[in-house]
Amino acid sequence: MSTFRQPGLVLTDRRFSVPLDHGAPDGERIEIHGREVVASDRAADRAGLPWLLYLEGGPGFGARRFIGPQAWLGQAVREFRVLLLDQRGTGASTPANRQTLPLRGTPREQADYLAHFRADSIVKDCELIRRELTGGAPWTVLGQSFGGFCATHYLGAAPEGLETVLITGGLPSLTATADEVYRAAFPRVRRKNEAHYARYPDDVERARRIAAHLAAHEVVLPGGGALTPEAFQSLGILLGGGDGTHQLHLLLEDAFVPTTAGPALSDAFLEGVQAHLSFAGHPLYALLHEAIYAQGQGPTDWAAERVRAGLPEFDAARTLAGDAPLLFTGETIHPWHFATDPALRPLRETAELLAARTDWAPLYDPARLAANEVPVAAAVYHDDMYVDTAHALSTARAVRGLRTWVTDEFEHDGVRAGGPRVLDRLLALARGEL
Image (cartoon, rainbow, N blue to C red; front, side, top):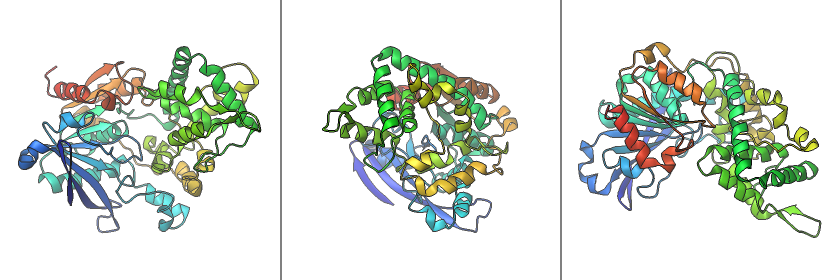
């Protein structure tokens, strides 16, 4: 363990050894990193504080590295001893990426390894860690987005480990296939495009001009990635965040500069695009994104790509041949990501094997969730671009005692934008105070 201080906080880095395969507890082990956070004025009596486990969104993102009591964390440490967990394969937890995965061997061996990196394994990690930290006492779990998917699995798999569960923008469908998830997603993405262009009408022509330039020129990002029209469209992932529409507009408004060879996309624009499109910091997001929806219903088989193929309005070439606005896409992963992004190119065959895999276990236990006794509260964001609201509310009705706060005050990242208020509201809901 190592301990350091930031303004108002005492932070201790902890490391835990867990089995790669919880079905073979005596086999290979991997390391999980967690950062314990307490308020400076509570550090002396930390042993008496209840634990709150934070599960980050994703998949593939390590826990946020806070600097001081930012967002919801400052509110949480008034009452809790917080553990910011890097889920397996992320952050400082035995990372899985283009540099480390070849150590596993062939793409088949890499895919078999990554099959152990879904919510079921993450929750088993949490249970081992909980027993080590709390002496067996249950803890409160706060799950953001994919972290909420993990928390929902936790409710069905190990409710005895849970004191309270708080979910923000992360109530998954208990039964939807990856195809059904994306068939529900693209209409929401279309609405986000329409709202963006209504706010920033000049961006219609700007986006078309950029896409046309990319169709006619080979453009390479500073990190070596290929910026194709389809890659440019994937900037639409910004449209699901609270300030995402404004971030997208600021990227588009000064994209071109004059050069001796004619107008070209500026270095500043390409640098900004690179920051949003590169998977170098979170490759598991691309590798496992569709696998988080797989539950023994057959292969995911690039579901987003297949659904998009049936929606010509999202086809850049068709759009440029006419006069319609270019539609940006959302939270979707496609085979071409593994050709355009240098962080993913060496993992293309591994990704194909994961897309073809058929032996994914079910993630949710509807019967146990229907008999749930753990206090649960969930923030459901109206017309959330990332998690379908109808799916979320269906699950809310299926989990006994779950209380929802449905709001359009925040987008999917509400726990960051309105952190203290969102945390307070959910705690009050879970405790029956509202």
